[in-house]
Length: 96
Image (cartoon, rainbow, N blue to C red; front, side):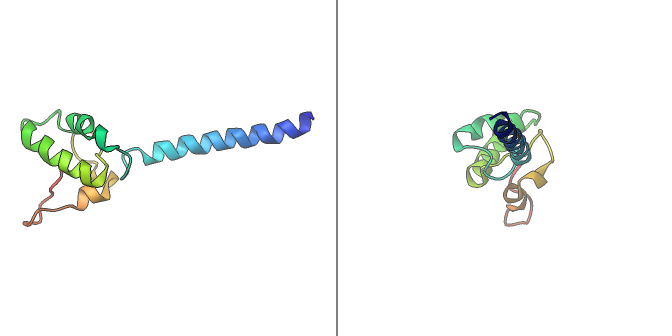
């Protein structure tokens, strides 16, 4: 009986490790933010800007559409292709 529990323990450890890797790799990815978490994530994203109102407005609009907010307060837009690729009519980035 001891032999049969060893493979299942190894399988369980591998499964848990894969779940951890998947969670870390999806952090910041599209669909990683729930709609109800957008205001909190956008407050974090816009915390360093002097233009808080427009930053929060556009960040929340982008988060609502993309369900993603890049990490940090600036840059890292490659983490969220939808957020990164949404442009204004002039071709400038819509999302902060």
